[in-house]
Image 1 (cartoon, one colour):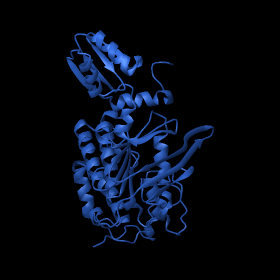
Image 2 (image 1 turned 90 degrees about the vertical axis):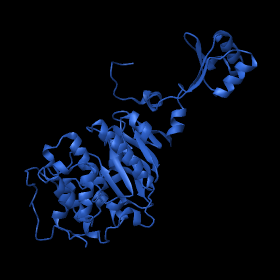
Image 3 (image 1 turned 135 degrees about the vertical axis):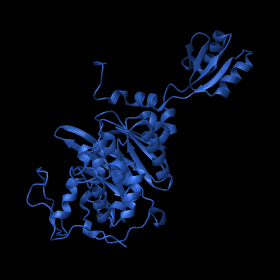
Length: 378
């Protein structure tokens, strides 16, 4: 049975411009002339349900699990996103796509515009450009919660509503059965705090509740901003595996993170920005292949002779010393280097390919775009 919505025109919880906790809120005018009580959801963190002005009164279709939805895969296309704060440009003409079936890592130095970009995509910030969700703006979808689930802030909850009540409120608005609330509470390990208020939550518990909110309606797209902040190592490992599983079901996942070691094993595709501008939009393997630290290590008893013949065939810039008895060769495969040594009768003790880490490739590409540096000026 589809649960009924908990708020009616006769149950407006707060009047005028003040919440029950005393903080102020700004009423939001809706073209559907809904009661103001609906739009307090914007205050309590209903990011996806009201993004771009999607009104809960328009949600009429019953909840259907993702696995049973037809045509549920969604491609997200961000085009020419732009945002400026006075003379400071946070995001500049940014365009990229997030495709289903893969985890897309959203990387950039501090202050590069990642969080602002996510808010622009959801319609939570005013700015230029547009984002299309399966070819339509988010507001044009009849059921926004099934299109995208977002977690942008670990503490964006009503401080006095319990974790379970918060999820039940969103479940009712999204026509999600209450049994799904129990599922996500268990999935995120929130059983011990389900009846507690988020104002006392640690950062890690806040992250768990935010993730539970994002996946509640089993959306086709997940947008997550630093979801691993505050989580312990076991939880980070679980989150990595879960997001990979989520994407493998034909859904799209966009994750912003500074944990490059995690992104290296989680992400299939990378979008990299610096100073609000796009630097890379390509598969992770192609991005890492850009690094100049990708090379072939060769060790030999006659390393000087080997270096000379390789430099003669591949060019002098292709060889650098690796003391005490090795050289690093760039721009060649292990097969090429081995063939050269064989043709000249030179012994080889070791021949191995060395691949750059994501961190090395990222630092090389974004070094010039690092706005906030540590250790003094360079």
